[in-house]
Length: 191
Length: 447
Image 1 (cartoon, rainbow over the protein chains, first blue to last red):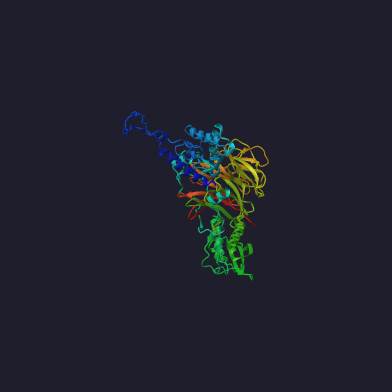
Image 2: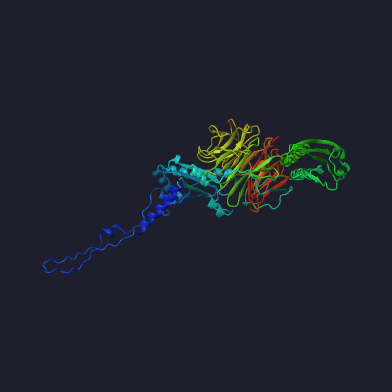
């Protein structure tokens, strides 16, 4: 089931996106342009002349795609919910100001979907001990959860775990790699 | 759902097949060579061990009678074990006349070559097809027998028998038990992010993969009787503590609670494990039953990180890593409750403590000079000695006789295991041909 659902959701999303961009608006269908048509006058002519009616022409406007809701929104690249990574400074578990909107959006989603379950995975760079780094990664995941709880996400549906230094995004011993690896990732159970 | 998950995400299988790659061990002597550069320039200074000369015993091992036709000749294994310990120098045996019984020993020949002791022995085939292996350790000066034992073994047990003989020789000459007939465990990371938990003889021979996974495996710990391994596997997309039987491969998830489960440590009686759980918030130490039954009991409650528990040999207290003082340091807590004591005071990063088998000292990772180094500290005097100069040394463990400290290190960007004697004088390197090797654990001496 969890394997089928995402595929279905992607297909649905694609369908909806396609629909949004190509379907003509209602106005086009409901209000065809009526112009004055010259009709042959019947003989003998005792009929009132055909009234030429001026109907304003309305240009069809392709509207902005509708925001997807529900699980589909989690993968919609236009939606902030598709952003899942919070990066941390060295030796810090402070969720930086720039990630507040991201965390708030996920908290709102969790509050709005009573069935949604989330896992926050904390990670560290590769300096230091494996088990101690596991604890530091846990602290990062917990910090994200803490902020989310304040914003209304129910704690029991948010599990925090740590990968410590075991699952780097970027291999290598450069400051850039270290910065990419100090992170917490948000994963939904439906992902 | 969990079934589907298991099929799709897990590629876990057990096998007792012998792994192809062999571990090679070399003795690198006392002096440190070609150390990697430090990770950062300014740091707490290092208090390196003094080093210095080692008193080496000069031992001659005469080839055993009738061992040349064996699949596994015995005397070369004994010689390699003794040599690897760094406490012995082998006297060249070539050119000596065959000698297998006490009355045949050519003491004049061996004394002329500087030998302090001579090992002689023989192998004979018993009626049931097994072998009888006998050895005698002779004092080359007094011309008396120091030790002599006989073993019966199958062909598959010849290496183990050789290790047991090396243990007996070592114990008689060095005055402490040998640890050659023991096993080690470690994790190999192969290219393509494949992780293997392996068990091998202490000399790196006969490696066997007991768990293979596409997700990381860390913190293997031998049960006190050597029959089981506790470890942390990420196969469920989170850290879960398992206990696995070495002989049968059967395993149990003993700590799989909401959140992270990690850092298992066996109680000396093998009945309980201290583990670190995040289910109550943060990383906190708990005691659980080693069979996974019952509910965890909180060992301490703090707002800090408390992790890496390690029992004292008498089981009364636990050393652990905590950042309750602002930086990670080693602390001690009585198992049955009581005041927590800080035990490390030098530097700003001290983690991964493991107590020596006699409980008189402990080893840990100490950051100094921009490196993460293996240190050893006397329990009562608090004297600290830094033993290694790697960039990122990890996870030190004592050999079961307390002589060596095995740890994870790096050479040329590759993970290797290395060992250093607890006085810093002897260094060894364990390399694996086709992967990163890490997370060592040294099994007990099994009588």
